[in-house]
Image (tube, rainbow, N blue to C red; front, side, top):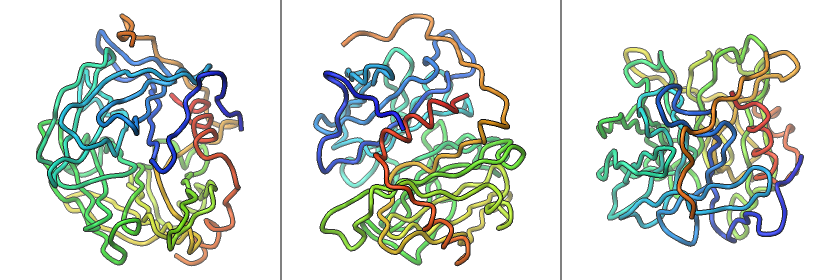
Length: 317
């Protein structure tokens, strides 16, 4: 673990959920691309702002601002190409609905939808082959248990629901798609258990993980969507063809408080090295129970933000 620190480096504001995304050089084509390994974080004190964090010094600057939101509560890069030249996607609540913004490498914001259903958390973009929902922004709603898809035209639909556990700080929270070659090379799925004081699920500031072999044995396929609940880390597998189906895979520690994305990492000693993408053409402006036991036992107490940043940087591409 190598924390990104230094004078003036980024620090999370107490009590806020610092969701972030790391670029793989999106979009895959076009005149303007995000730099490989660039880090973007939701600002907590200024509603609507997205910060760009220097991966070396840790210093942050305002990169883009989404107008008309009460806050931002989700961020992810689109690796499918569905959102074209605006691959950095963010979500935020306003007046009981959600706004979805798409941002290009210069920080210009396009509003995809301002009437999407309530959603929040570790959002993801569906890869090719995910039934009729490929290329959609997929996001959970912990209150209803719905898993929502929003396409590039702003049309929203409910893919699936998990209602065994619903409500604030309880329901579906974290999402991630099993990547290509995950079972070929082996690796792990990582999930953050965030310490949250005065909560029935207080968390431990740990990283939980499941091995690719465990997921394969449970019948998970590459391209499936995994979603974990905020309270206790119950993890479900969502697969979509003509319709979407849901089944429970794992349970985390009973006290776990889950936040952020589910991050998949291929075994770096087996997988071929990634090839960094180019810098932008012009710079952005300044300014089941057995598996559950394994999941519980795999937590290692760490500084969550730092370790995931480093893991994502090492395996991006």
